[in-house]
Length: 197
Image (cartoon, rainbow, N blue to C red; front, side, top):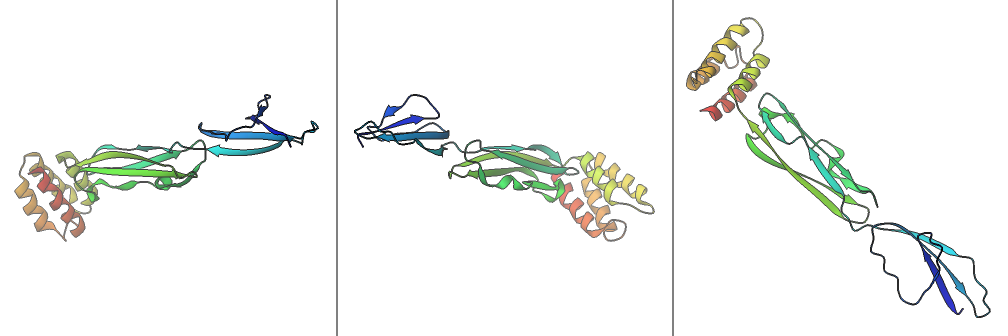
């Protein structure tokens, strides 16, 4: 054998191999090569295919923003990698999917990540905010207080909220807790109303 020649990525130009080849560009590459002996005989070309992936996956979170306590907070994410593909991603399920009243009031930061087959990891972060408003508490009242006489109780509690009579609201909820207002619902209302004081 007197020399080896090679061609890159399906090219028609064959170059004599002299030094190690360095590949830096992301993507799928093909390397074809053949050897030539002193008599000019050439072997059949051989080809190998390989990928270079130095770029982390792209991760994107949707659903951040501001929610009131009567809403449902839903955050999801997507992860893409066009070269070696995703091998793990926290985007396989919803990042957050919960009634807002069950979450922390204020700002919460959520992160997501994905790893590709080359070991690169990409991340994304967003913030969502949960806040208590008079209107959102009234929505919860209408949802949770049902049955005979419910509308009168809702009207009474709504009136107190709209006039900023939060202590009177607390007193009435405590008085009706476990009776006309389910215990769990009353506990949530009592926890939330103090955020308005």
